[in-house]
Length: 497
Ligand code: SF4
Image 1 (spheres, rainbow, N blue to C red):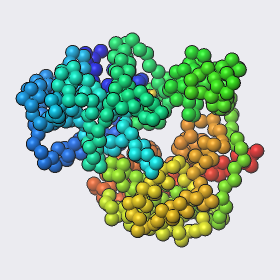
Image 2 (cartoon, helix red, strand yellow; image 1 turned 90 degrees about the vertical axis):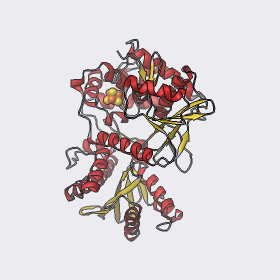
Image 3 (cartoon, protein in one colour; image 1 turned 120 degrees about the vertical axis):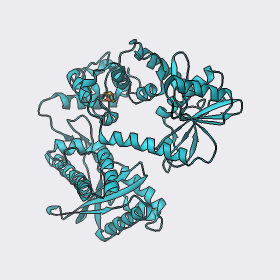
């Protein structure tokens, strides 16, 4: 058992409480190897921090050469003597320990800050300014808590220096969102209590199937446990919180499939918080699909898709670490004839704005020449990224062009408008990988994943190795083909009806 609670433990807890349990007490021989993408994230994080520190034009005390008790002692001395800015210090109390990237003198005390190689906010888009990231907030709150306990805190407003060169203040006394009035500080204290219980073996956690698992080194082990328990989170869109409130009544997918739901219903509501009657019935339908051998996917309501002689199955690849869209891939099909298919790609050979703009501009030209056509894509990502590119390069296309391109008469988000709303599948999630694989499609790459392809792009930029570029293009082409396979699969459901 660790003798002190750290920021890293809080970070892991917020991502997945079970991850914290397994990292503390799990059998490390059961872990998956760390993926190349995760290693890249670590490297880029360290490189970015070094770069930021190197470019600082203000004096600071660098304690990065020290570790452990020596680092803590020197940090205390620096605080006591009022050093303006401390880089890579270490602060602690009897049961808490933190290593903030920065400690900055402010008024009569210090505030802490971290340097992050990603955006300091989440959910930034046309409609929202974004909000603090919970996993960043709890880490910053832990540093602030330690400063308060040491009686050297200047206030609860730590900060993040992010990839965009911004300083983002995290006001820990402010509500988490308009819908959640609880402050970030309360969230932190609740998390700290739970982390403490997990570390003391006073709180048992369970795995939960979710998107976070994709990059986790316990995924193979957890998936085995989830399968063995026939856990409710194996039902698409039924997450950890819902599982936790349902589990004392319904312990598995099979139990939900067989349950008489009347006992849980109260008018349009159910006894389960945040689960309405219709949602409960939807989960039961899914549980039945997963439980019955030979279950087939089906349509819940009629679908009408736009019609045009040319179809474009569209998929992009981006590098979030460089904030660049480096590939626009299209599978073009004419008159519904698969033998007419060809793959067309627009690739940025360099991760710079000039190349990004060229690829974007050529992709837009290609779409215009293909009109009239229907564009199929999977999830809102392509639309969000193209809107972002349009704002960055308004000379390439106008806001009106974007609206027209993604008009429902010409473009279909197969995930949001069709799969999610109108179909049911006997699978554990609705990712394109899962559904196309269910329909028999196989990617040519042995480890196809969007995250891994980012790592390939980094290696392509560093080495110029054409084999890596070919691998990226093949992977993107397969994603485009998978979208076409899924469309055909959906059409076959319509015919079966
Ligand atoms: S695989 Fe998923 S459930 Fe298991 S520890 Fe990791 S994130 Fe948690």
